[in-house]
Figure (cartoon, rainbow, N blue to C red):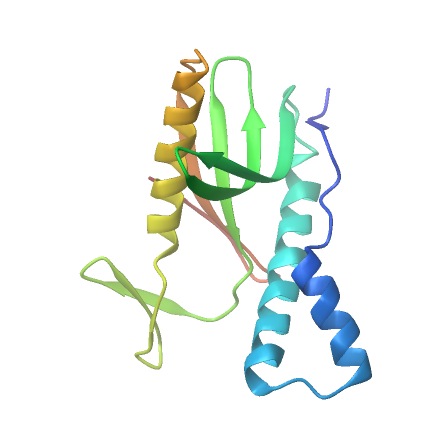
Length: 157
């Protein structure tokens, strides 16, 4: 039995708009970077969907969720519901090399970047609180997944 994907991941609206604008005009450097970042991220999320959908276990797979809880909006790349637990996945499709120092993330150039583990921890906490408010007590396991042609890496929190 394979995993069951509840809905097909759709291309984000912002990516659609930038794609249309890019075909009609010359984007600013900032917009061009954002366009490539969004495009790369969407490609990575689709790769993850293809991999997780081939699971040998029965899983309910829900990609691309947006929640609001207690006036806070949070996004989940993929949520997988198994029999006795929930898996939350933050997916990154980044081929650049990184290093970590004092809980901060850097490119090899030394430029500090957003720490994706902080985003994951925030989403995990908000999802847990939302589910508890609805009467659900399933344990949540959160994973940061790097998907790219060279490697597939998962960091467990």
